[in-house]
Length: 215
Image 1: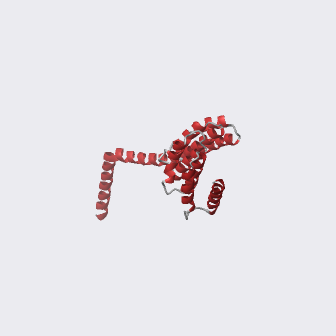
Image 2 (image 1 turned 90 degrees about the vertical axis):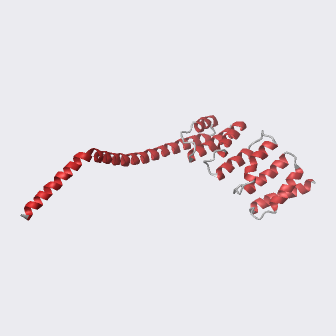
Image 3 (image 1 turned 45 degrees about the vertical axis):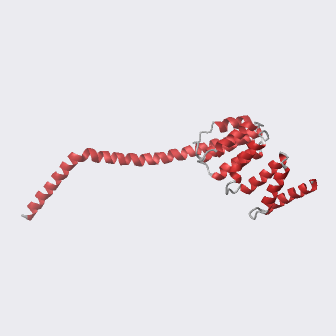
């Protein structure tokens, strides 16, 4: 008798499962399909991202090769048309490469504009933004003192690793634009700092000696 009840109970459970399946199978199948699609999509995205990164890397090094071969017009076109997203590393490197290509091609105004793209992009690390400012000033032979000094100020007023070098560059700007008194004050101030390297201190001391000889 117990066996009969067990068989009946089992049949009822099967009927219940069948009813539940008939009622919810569309949702269950939909959920399974969604789960499979999400897994495949995730794997596909990872593969796509990896392939995209490899393509961007190859494109960048091809552009860099043209620059190293002194084919500046070709490297300019390649760097300008970089397929990299505007906020990623290869985009920034390509813009540095573009600025370098313009500089080597004696197009200083376009070089300045290229560096400006980097230091105005808040998605890039501050160090590289300051580096772009620094290079745009040290290589700029067409802008006025005020323009150059204004461009340098964000580095001078920040705790950047490039701050002491920017302060040295400021001294050279004072010298180049015949601002002798400002140069001497800035020189003394920088020499008094404890965080400057020995090499920099030696350079500054030499500049100081040269000023002494010219007085």
